[in-house]
Length: 119
Image (cartoon, rainbow, N blue to C red; front, side):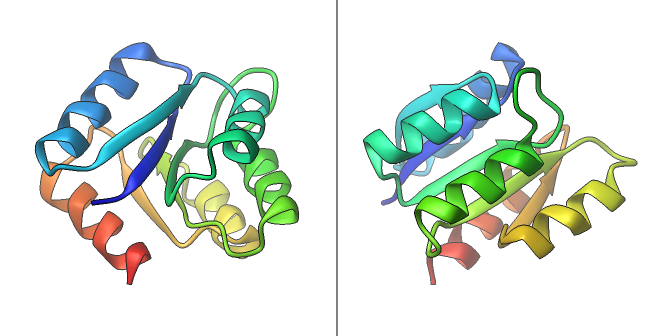
């Protein structure tokens, strides 16, 4: 069981992801709706894994990956993206994200990504 921080500007997406994770007995320790909140909550909560949307207001997921990695080089981050955001996904992976999942979320793919980053 992992402690997970969910970051997405859409409440519906956070709820969908939280339901998938809770069903698999993971603990959702926090939710944020922009990159700045994500960084603050990461520092405060020290989750095992972060799911991070790429496109958000205030601070993008890409900026948040860099900022979180600056605070914790070992942070385990999974990017969430819509189709057609491959260039940003590649940038996020280069910045330190370990995996990515595509919206709409496929339950088995979400669990596969979580298992992979926890190894």
